Length: 339
Image (cartoon, rainbow, N blue to C red; front, side):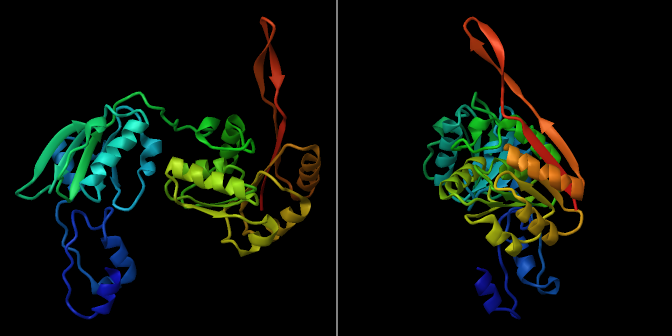
């Protein structure tokens, strides 16, 4: 499409796109590829606004997605009872697979209102539920309005998602430590995180879930853990994570400079100095230490570079006979320093 437009550059060309060209549409791509003087947009009512008008839904409280080329997993962290979606789909067959996705996650009772050729004189509306959305011969463009219902697992909005949402081999920043860590990382819009020694990628993923404009680079040396990071990204609907299967020492000077650095494993004084000399001023660096050796290292470095040390000690109850006792977890020493 863009290639054909460029090939005819200088000639008057009419491009018909559905709905709002600058809302999950082709308009943004054209605006990037061509100068502002080279194009004009004549905006028609969008499928989103037409669908909301048909449903009687206030647009400010609805979640809108264009899933022509994206995986349904991008919806995963938003799925909860009473949440309303307006979703644009590639074709009629996509309605069934979207219904299967909702059903698999325990939201098969969700109300599906299917709009065919919305805004056209042959417009058609069909009401069903997700688990019964096997409707044939649906004309496109197709749009589905969804009122989510069911008893599926809802991913909490708080930082520190339960560990069972992440596939891992045991090397994962655990839920409550992760919550404290995300608080220390303090994600802000458009910031770039380095997650070095990423393990299962839980910190990177929670960073990216904090705001749709954040980006992250995860560096992990173990190939099996890299595969886990990719699986977790898919499960959480994350596509903005740059994953590198490499040694931290070999890649950090080649990476786009960060706003924040998190080091969860493989920390030593040499790596810290390399990072410190490379990253820009005001970069936040957070290190979590489990071992005595790493704790000793960050204590020494904090005396030179400053920052704050925090010791985190958590306990869980466990049974001894008929009684309960406190079982201590390994203490974590966290160092936060700003260049």
